[in-house]
Amino acid sequence: MKMRHPLDPKDKLIQELQKLIGLPNICGSIDEIHIPFIDLLSKRVTLAQSDFFNNKKFHNSVLQNACGVDMQFWNVCVRQPGGVHDGGQFKVFNLYKQLRD
Image 1 (spheres, rainbow, N blue to C red):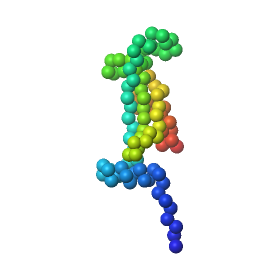
Image 2 (cartoon, rainbow, N blue to C red):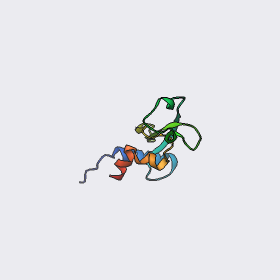
Image 3 (tube, one colour):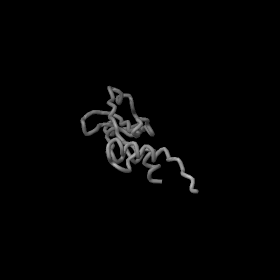
Image 4 (cartoon, rainbow, N blue to C red):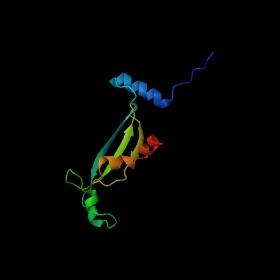
């Protein structure tokens, strides 16, 4: 008789999300939010202010996060200035390295 292995937590999330929205093989979502700076950059000397200026015309840093259908965060990253493109944001995200490996 074959033993059944319990579902991996990731597989359980995939099943729950498929029931909820009908899309297979998805276990969570990634999003980012721009956090504006208010007169903080005048005190910084290590990075260029233009690095923090985004396409929405304000200075900011980006918070990127990943969570599952259970609304639990897997990963949160606040590393990049707001002027960096979304793809550049994702490549410094620890989750990117985990998925790639």
